[in-house]
Length: 614
Image (cartoon, rainbow, N blue to C red):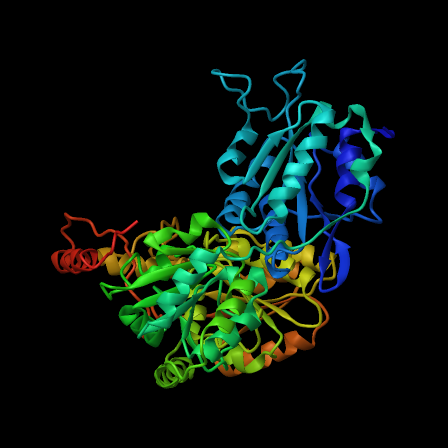
């Protein structure tokens, strides 16, 4: 057997550089690069190795470990899980900073390779700087935090262990069903140790998307349900995008006349112009989509986890005889809610369903009426009025008018995702990028950078509230350093406006969410000059005071050649009441606040409508 002597760090870097993927007829590197923040736990070992492969495996520098991981995750999502990145850190806080991002990737089924440094495998210098010691066992280290949020986890205690571990890592990262974050911990002494690796390990390997045909029995059972359905509904989840099934979904819906409702992950699978698209479903859904869900007798759930925001905490499907068909590449998701499982690739299965069902007028007229009603509501709530501060909806209306069809919208947490899910009319498939599986504050700007790195010839708009901006904004500077232009719309509502509204609806109080209600020493609401802050990080920045000026600022930002931040104040009390659905947020059973009994009674009434059926 031919071998080559390399350190573990060098072998890892060379292996990653040899991985390719087939995308649209081309073979491109599977790993677009490695985000690295170096420290004593990775700079001398893996860092030395990365410096040797810059031509084939670029290394990018970031300012925050969680943020760089968000960027890598957003890149994978924007490339529909075809390509990915790795992230390496030192031991200690550098590693644990990435755990939140690992959880985000795990929830959203997105591939990212985490390579945190680790303490010494030989334990000779223990305890080392940043080592978390456990009195119970020396085997327990800080990186064990990654175990529950990784789809595959390993700690390399001998250089030769990479040979088998990397094979399993690639299996998970490229598998449609098992896809998610992989963590391989790298003790700092092992990174520098040499071993005679087989040359074959570093040969070019081309990965291809695996497409699973549906089981014949499951397919026929699902087909029978669809044939005799009187009020069918399709729910499009993120799996539609990952499968590349956008066109297949559009064709199936047109062929059968079945309306399509969208989850946050699935929104943008169809453009709003598609005749069967009835908008978002669930807690932040459109009026029409939720009405159709309530009466549906057969629900074809494509590539969705059917999480609580989609199902209205299991209360959106009210037909007692309703059956859900779980079309999903992962059997784990296909059986949720006692669904009739249809395990298979979304694109292949939708194409096969289209060929097996007769063309039908279906519910085309019903969908048209629901769409028109929602378009009227959208126009009403997004049109500017005479209030002192604009609403989020009015800002989105102006932004929609100013953006091009290929521009991408990125958001993650707070009130903006709900308004976007309800009101944003996607102009072209693939231009709506929401991280709402983990609803992670701080994802927005870092995620926008990842989307920009994966997207060519369009602008990327990052929509972020002041709360999320203050939580994580450092990658503004990284976007400028890398020449990756973003347009950041910073909506300032004076604190955590979304949670403040939720708090008011459940307790009738406002506490610790808005600046004006928080703890202050001087009795004044703190003033934060977001414009000056963004400029200090190198961005172009301006503040606008009304919707007309906002549209002009968007046009200036589109014409600019680097990252721009547009700050606009918004009313924290206003959100779109139309549409939407109940969400299970417990109401306290004992309270002295005004209206407490009525709130508890209403909550208990909705609890009775929940369908707890698996």
